[in-house]
Length: 168
Length: 404
Image 1 (cartoon, each protein chain N blue to C red):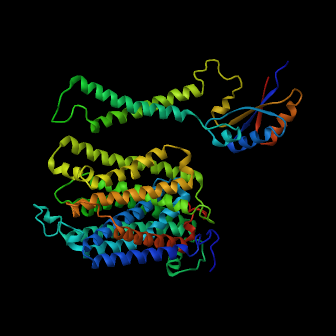
Image 2 (tube, each protein chain N blue to C red):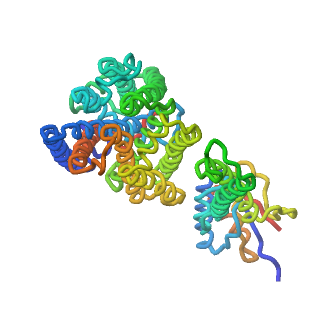
Image 3 (cartoon, rainbow over the protein chains, first blue to last red):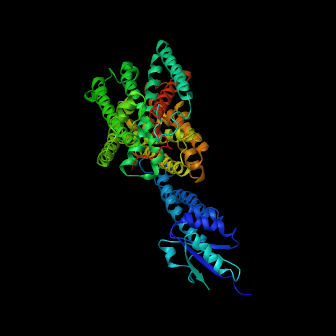
């Protein structure tokens, strides 16, 4: 069975792209994916996508970092077991600094890991249907249609104010 | 009255704020008068001091957001910039309350008549009242000038209304060049307000809070005080924005409330950080002249219970709740959080001030009198802000934004 023809509409702003995504199904076409130079909540909502789960990676990293920082400070202090200026060997107030710094460090690391996992990077094959303008100033909406309706899909995107590109 | 085209409903709450404010004010004034005539008039004066500090900080911090947004040209804050300026209506009342404090004498300034070991040159009542009074005059003068320039860019020609509105409308720009001049002046006064805010509120922190324990000092206390005041200002603004939800012309966009929530979250952390840096340096130094201040307020009963309440209300709960992204754009939870932080910082003022007045306290000196005086100040704030919004409905979020 031959693959469905795919057409990409390239929009100058995300509001128009989001409107096109909402109306694609009503017109009998199938929305495939959207590309853009910046994240857009409008497009995400129109495409029925949920919020990014990257924040959970960040939170998990932060909680782990806080515990790790405290544990590291306690462990190293306990190794020397020296009383300095009458302070307890395991002292909460100064160890909070180490805990805080590790919170930030591991939050950032968790964020990067979350980004890589959620975007499935690195991707050495590259996207088959990527238009370079979507990394510059255009929002691309990729849709497919039954064979023989390419003309209607092209017309749909043009009416919405998009430039179009057909993928074989 | 001819309603200006860009002004939404001038009375989004009808007469309710005036009635509520007047009732609260009457209750507060009666409680203050009753307290002065009671067995311990000092408690009434201390309630006046604490509430003066708290409610003035809300007004000063609120206007600071508008001044900052104007100075750095932050467009996200346009919907709440006008609301923030409405807090300037409290400035004259704050000034009156400050000079009223002078009548409290030793009940407000416990170091009067004490041996201050050489600090007398700085800590004497006439000099303190003169420098702080001058500071408030400068701060409020610059704040009023900033609000005036902004209002003249918001108002439409041909407005009628009260004397204040007519006076403001008398200087509306008649040409693009005049508008440009007003915008430059607004930015200038906005920047000056930010600088004056830092300087004057540092001075107030040193003079009206830190000096109550005249032998204890911290060079960071001024910074702590003005960071807290901005945190309070943001809390007050969030409460006001949430109250206006669903009112004609008063709806703050969810995106703007979300941005305000992020700033609130940041200052929750910064306020706690300023407390922590105090704590850590004092803990490391371990000098009795410094540690007694912290120990009395965080370890010794009855104040330790208050310290935990402050920690939970002003830091732990807001911190944990504001991590969530969605909650920051939801008016009801943000209203609850704003009220919680304001209540927590009201208690924090008592925590800083109370032990200085009553070092031997066995129970917290917080009762009906303190609550009623707080209600009186709430009434004053409601009257001041609603009065500003009634006179200048262009400050409401639904009005045409002032030209950037």
